[in-house]
Structures are given as C-alpha cells and as structure tokens.
Image (cartoon, rainbow, N blue to C red; front, side):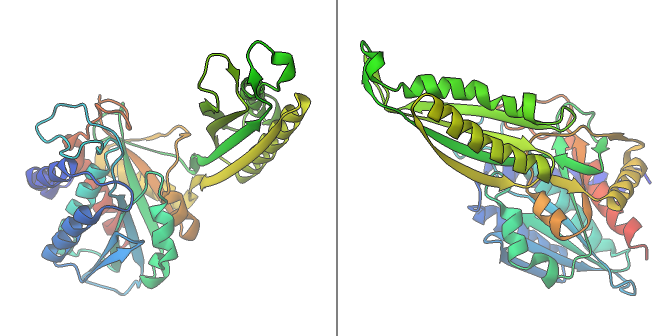
Length: 386
C-alpha cells in the first residue's frame, strides 16, 4: 500500500504543527511546552489514555483498536527535544529562542507521530493496542533511559517498539534500515595530565603537560589502528585541549583533554575503555607526569532486532516502493535503551537535499511527512491486522 491519501489531506495541518514546534524549540528535559502541545492534541484525537510526566517530561498516548483479540501492544516512539544551536536558516518559522534550534528534525518526528496518532484514533482498524511515545532529552540527556526506568514498557505491556529518524541526503520519503548494530555507543572521556609547571626558558626543570598531552592525542589513535580488529568499528576523537597556563612564557602544570569513543559492540567498547586507561597512565608515567581519567559512559549501541527489522523494511517497501540497506552510523541514539528492553526496529526516512543534522542551516523537509506517517500507521495495521 503506498502513502495513505489521508496523510496527503492532513499534510497542511501536520506541517503547521511541525512549524509551530520548530518556532518553539526546547532542550533536553525542558520540553514543557512541547509536551503540553502533544498531550492536548492526543486528547483532542480521542486517545483512550494520555499520560504526562513519564521520564520527567515524556508523554504517552494509548489508542485501542476496534478489536483486541490479539492482546498485542505496539509502541511507536518520537523524540521531542531540540539542540543548543543558534539557527541560521532565515526561515519565516525559524526558532524564536536564541541559542536553541530543532537542528535534528525532532519537530518533524513529533509531528509525524502526531499525524499517525490522529489517523489511528480515527480509524482504529487494527487488533490490539498502540502506545505512542513522545520522548524528551534524546540529545545527550538519556530521555529514553528515563522513560524506561519509569516503567514505560511494563506499565503499558509493550511487546514491540519502533522508531524513525529523518536523514538528509536521501531522497525525500525513501527509507533505509539495517539489522543488528546500527548506531554507535557514545562514551566520553576527560584526561587531566598533571606535570610540573615552570618558566618557558627552562623546560629542563619542568614536566611539560602540553607536550605530554600532545603525545597522548596521537597515542590514543592506536586504539583504532592497532588494538581494534580492522573490521570492528571504533572512532576515538579528542575534541578539546585546555591547559592551566594562559601566558606565553609559562609551561603549563596541567592540561586537560576531552573527547569521545564510539563503538558498535560491547567487546570493542570494553577494550577501548581499558586501552584508554592503559595508554594514558603509561604514557604519562613515561614522561614523569600523572594522569587522572574520568570515563563517562554514554548511550549503548543501538541494535535492531532481526525479525522486526525485516518487517519494518517490508512495510517501508509497501509505502515507498523500496527500502535500502543503511550504513552503520557512528552517531548515538538513545532509542537503544528501548531496544534493550523490547524487540523492535529503527528506520531512516529521506529528508532530501538539506544541510546535515546538527547544522545551523538544517531544516526538516515537510514533504517527508506523508511517507513517515504512513510508515507508522502501516506498522500498526500490518502487525495487528483487524
């Protein structure tokens, strides 16, 4: 079945919802206005149950089918939060909040799931129950983890869960997916190199923490080049360096490195953490310095389940005519927590020729809305046939 005509009819309305959300971005768990808009619309749609405050500011809506002989429950999840980026699109509906922007398309995800919820509440042409999940704090706050910790899966007895993300560079409304590890685990680290400061004219009387840190930056790359199996993905990025010295003629006592490690498997994740510690401690000792290491675990790798991925791809083909094999993506996605609790799948929908996500000129393409809404609706109607 191609894109549903109902969503073509609803496109102006859903677009208006999306652009309103875009004008009023909210960051992390501070999604109070967004959550209120979502909850009000779900109530207007006639959802059987609407609950707020799940995972702090998350919203859950429940829609029961005409039949419930199957007893099955499908979860559909969209993220609501924006990013701390100053928008540079110049659009008439650009962010009204300085320093905040929907630069990842979560406004589009929320609007598409609202559109699907409106249709499903109107038709109820399925046997079972749908739980629509609107999650805060995907961008680094772990809102998915918080919603699960609040009992999301058990409270509504969810059997399977499905998510979607727009993707620039793909044809609008096309789909892409892969089974198994899809998005990376995203850990962070801070390494403080403690040396011995002194006068820049007398380096022999110092232990130069900047020089040690520079050696360490290069050495950390051997995790990928010499410790990892060449077919096992790992990315080590040092993204910040800051020393205690602000003068031209002072050798710094202390230098801090910050960065991320991104991996796809639990084994590689554990190895990378261990090698980070070993390399930092050993190299610093070699130069007479000391290392203090703060390893900050982030999102786990997001792993699609095989059966649900095959089903999600088939649904995508029924909507758009094709579904490509997606590449592994080294970005993080906290839908991973939901997929650790329940089988499910996560798919990409094409956003066309736009700036990449997390860019100040990014914009969600509203022409993708009918395909995205149709995919969510078809997930329900095909998985829970009436």
